[in-house]
Length: 539
Image (cartoon, rainbow, N blue to C red; front, side, top):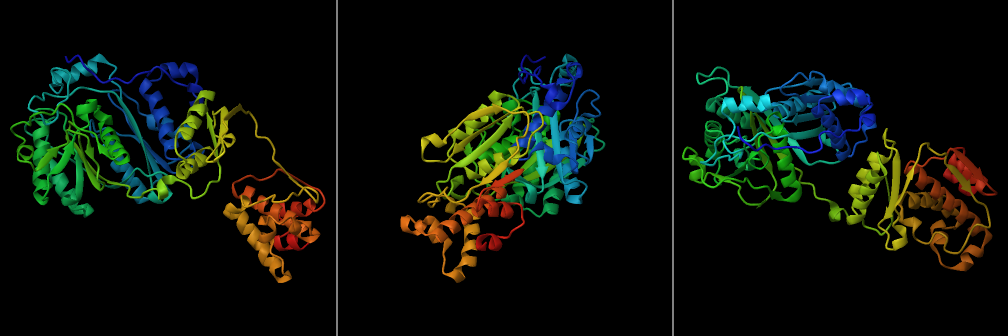
């Protein structure tokens, strides 16, 4: 048996309380199930979604178990999240995660669910499974996976844990790529045996796939092959790609296999392929296929240059990516991804110098600090801050710590990192002042930079225009004589506080109590909806 295997560290670590699991039950759970729960949570947060938002939604769950009965792993995730969409396990051996992605895609398209979570895992813990693959003859002699190479003799088994959150594009807050199409078929009977690949059925799958989705093979920017380095698998796959895709292209097809880098994670390998593609789209660099020196003599498409194996870090130019995944029982799948062409406006930088409040929560104090330190280490990115705000705008059950910082200000003292342990939500009270609280330039131009505040002042301007009074001029003027006029002063305080009420409520800060003194009592009437803007400013 080969002496090398790909391993994940720290599989013994788990926080059962966060997932509402008793310590006794956690100790008897398969570590794969524990890690799937953790990575599902991470995928949801990474998508910019608060887990609480999924409660009661028709979010589908598909989980890929392997080598033992984990019949309700998907149900466990649905139970924890409170989702009511289709929840099932799926197993087609090495192509399981691609089959699950394709089923999730179909369920969303058909309206059976609004979103879907596809979770895949592979932990090589039991020696009997390793020995079984060794006797099957698919493992390499030295533990290295060499796809396409003349020295390839099989693959190295590997751990992997991957979760994908699939949404409708209109609902997504963070889009790495678009799932364009997915299709499956099965080899059926083969004289060589059930584990022998079928060139005929792989070719048929690709032909039907690109005819159905309406995308020309010439539009493919890259192909991520299933290629495991086995003696019969690689030649069949390369030949099917050559005859269906390369025959319709004028340029070499770039190709690679993640299994050279990670080994073969079997049921989880399909999502590892997708992860590699998404990293290329995010970083702009395609990860090279390693251990490839000289192609096998059967791989004429590579030898003659119709297929080019990516062996060096290569610039990603965007577009479509095809991904193959084949189960050793004959279950074949191909999916097509398209990179997200949208570019951040001004690279995410704001078009003003307003400070940004970043509020986050975490299970521990250290977790909160890590997030805030990460925000501080970046240039101000308003899209990223907006994503964090959406996730942490509501309480996440089990997060005992919250922290905040103010970023984007040119003055250093506006950058704050204060982390507090809070147990209850404190009531909010708005206190509105009367005459005597004013000072020259009390608004300056800072508040007018907020569109909601500026709009509220403009509404007051429209009401007062017939009286020859312009509230905007009063608020932003540096002329002390303007504020010495008692009418101007009265209107400035009323208009200022109307704008502040609108600004705070627009970001979800709603008072539990309101108190006012003198003209502040008018603003109380506006804040609780008794008075309109016109009634308040004219009172």
